[in-house]
Length: 358
Image 1 (cartoon, helix red, strand yellow):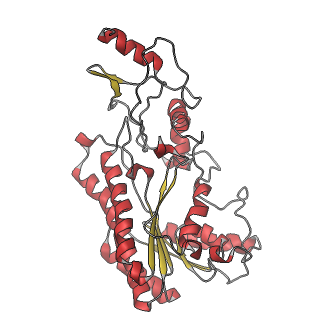
Image 2: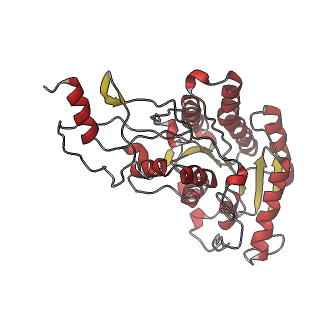
Image 3: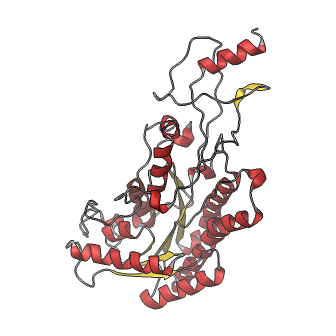
């Protein structure tokens, strides 16, 4: 048996060098047992980042690094022309707006909410966009319609979109928004709940008001919206589809910076999906969840440009060897929203490049 100091040194050299910290849902899986050797091993997935952090009392376990934080960038720090989740602009090809598609994937005459351009691409012609900022919601709705009409992908008046200001954590605001949607379009066929926040605090320092805000948006907001959509579907005795946007962090603990409140909120969304799916199954209302992994959004691009080691670590820990692109979610949301998934309910579709499998 090697002395403790030699054992720790040997393990540090033998294990893949994979340690990082982030405010944006990063974790390390527990490291499997490794033969004692002083010969360095290559990184499992071909990328070497920073050394594993060891607890001196428990040398075989990774430790939490509370001294490292990744602050969110200001909007002014985003790269000029970086569209992130945006789908408009001269450099973006959103594909053909056409009804010539697999019939079960068609969203023609369906009401999409959020993921709006994806639904428009698949034929949806009545779309409501909710945002905390009413003007941003209205602008997004106007730009959506204008883009498809200006590019010849839709005839004038073919697509109708409205933007509504809504704090989804406020039950009364959600009720009012859904009343406006039903008054305008007559019904809700599909709901996608993509509103969510994450803030960068260690669990011991997490302010109570911030915790309530997090749960209000991520959990209460998802429930209020799902409930109001389901009530309209039940009122009409028609089938419908509800897609809750969770996170792979709802099924895994992020090390070395766990973000416990955020992870708990997304775990709640995931289980809410399962419970509502069972409760509403006899009403022909399907409820499913999409759990994205590390996505190369405008936000994460700025963070990772500032920290190449973190970028390497995220890539290294993803079996597919890359971050996800927002467009990787498009097929998933249309599948779950459309009749292509007519017998699928209560599912958690992880779009994470295999991250949570390791």
